Image (cartoon, one colour):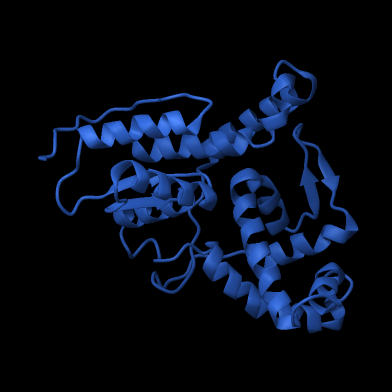
Length: 262
C-alpha cells in the first residue's frame, strides 16, 4: 500500500471511551500509511497509557512498529533539540525520571548521613533505615524511583511549587494564590528541590539545561490556574471537582503541545 498524501491540519476527537478513540485512530492510520523509514508519533500523559496504547495498536494493526510513544516532556525536549540544535539543548532531560533516579541515589545517602540535615530528612531516613522488607540499599532505590516519579508529576501539575521551593520558599501555593506554610514533615521536599535545581551548562552533551515557559506564557498559565481552581471549589465548575485537580496540568500539556506543533 502506497502512502496517501496527508495535508497539514488539526483534528480534535472527543469520547468518554478511549477504545472508541483508538478505533478511529487505527482506521485513520490504515487509510493514511506512512512511507518507508517514517514513524508515527503519539504523545500520551503517562507510562501506563503508553503501554496500553502500544498493545492496543499491535492488536488493531497486527504489529506496532515504526511507532514512537512519548510523554510530553520527552517530546518537547527531543523536538527542541532538533529545532535549536545540539549546541543549545543536551541529549538528556535534566529531570527525566531515569537520570534523576540515579542522581538521587548519589545525593540522598550523603544527606541522611549529615547530622546537620537529620531533622529535615528524618521522614526519608525512617523509610530507608527503618525495619521493613528488603535491604536498606533496595529501599533507597525504591525511594529514589518514587521521588523521581513524584518530581516528574510536580513538573506537570505543580510547577509553581517547584519554582517556589527552588527559590527557597518553603510553602504550598493554593488555588487562589495564597502561600501556605509547608508542613514540617514535608520540609525535606523543598530542601531536596533546591539541591536538584539545575543551571545551564556550557557542555551541551553532559551538562543539564532547562527549557522553561516565557514570562508571558507563564503568566497566562497561572491566571488560568487561579481562575479554574477557584471555580472548582464552589463556583461554576464545582461539579467537575472530581477530576478538576488535574485540569490545569492537563490543559498546560495540551497548550504546550499545540504551541510546539503550530
